[in-house]
Image 1 (tube, helix red, strand yellow):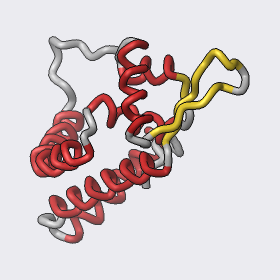
Image 2 (cartoon, rainbow, N blue to C red):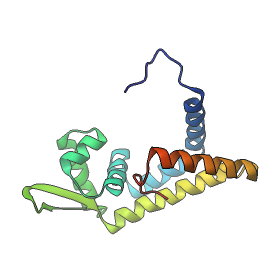
Image 3 (cartoon, one colour):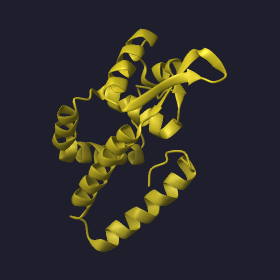
Image 4 (cartoon, one colour):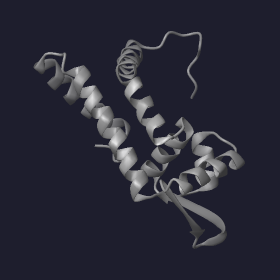
Length: 155
């Protein structure tokens, strides 16, 4: 269901959005530095995250997930294969189809970026009083348990 652009989002949504904006402002330079250093584009990084979250996928499934054409996704995946961030194999059920999955190097890159993001959030939240951080942790954990049980694979 799409939100009505003529209504004001609820306070909770605005608050969470402001927190995410603050985090992105705090961490965007570090994230871009890593992407430049690894020579990874945002769609390539999105692909790596999709593969980490969803496991091996067909190229068509990846294209659908990241919102690119099949041709563009095939080229993007080819570059990731050349960089050894993903592997591409024949689908055992249909040899005409190709399956792609994270390689150990790709998994390591995604994990490293996640650890950097967590450290960035920790740096940002360290400015809060300990009791407020504890309440925030409890409330966010409760919300995540209801919104994304065992889905995101991030811990």
